[in-house]
Image 1 (spheres, rainbow, N blue to C red):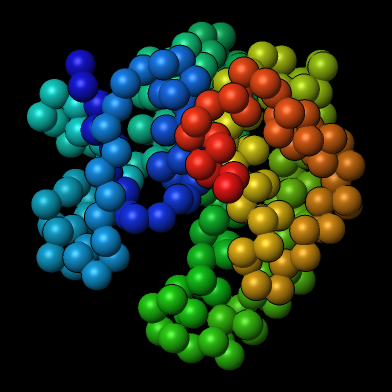
Image 2 (cartoon, helix red, strand yellow):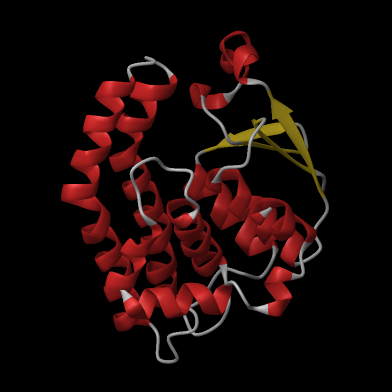
Amino acid sequence: MMIKLIYFDFNFWRVDILRLCLSYSSIPYELQRIKRQDWKKKKNQFPFGQLPVMQVNNQFFSHTHSLAKFCANQASLYEQDEFKMLIVDQVLDWANEITNHIAPSIRAAMREKNFEKSRELRKEFIKNDLKRWFYYLENLLKRSSENKDFFTDKFGIADITAWRIILWFTSGKLDEIDSSFLNYTPLLKKYYDGISNYEPFTKLKVYKKIVS
């Protein structure tokens, strides 16, 4: 089985969690990059007209949550217990939700080139959503984990996803967002620092490429 991941020509959590997952268990895959300017003429080739897309044995599959579960299962980074599956799926859905909340401010800048609108939408996001959604994630960690090191008490796709989203929001690449917001969720900050120093994860070449 040869896996090909297809995404735009930049790093983003939706494809990065797939890459990290497969790389963690040394599962070979190919990464195909598509330039943004070429996307309009290519998007109808793919299911749902969205990226990321995964090609396996000449079949194409889409939607981040579905692809993440497939890759995690291949890499033994998903759960078999049905209640722990629910914890993992909640983290994946949380990642989609917070992305959907910040997306309007990103679209206003990147697609519409309306930077004033983008700033106003970003301020609205920070006021109404930023801390609230990270509180949600911290509370899930409190409820779900005994050791507070990993969401299901062993490293898996939930941790890769949570770590990648937190990296995005604390990277300084999102205008108006000060990384100090994570201080308001001290347990989550400690958790993030722990994942960022988890040697089996941080030794991966793809990890180093993402954080560089």
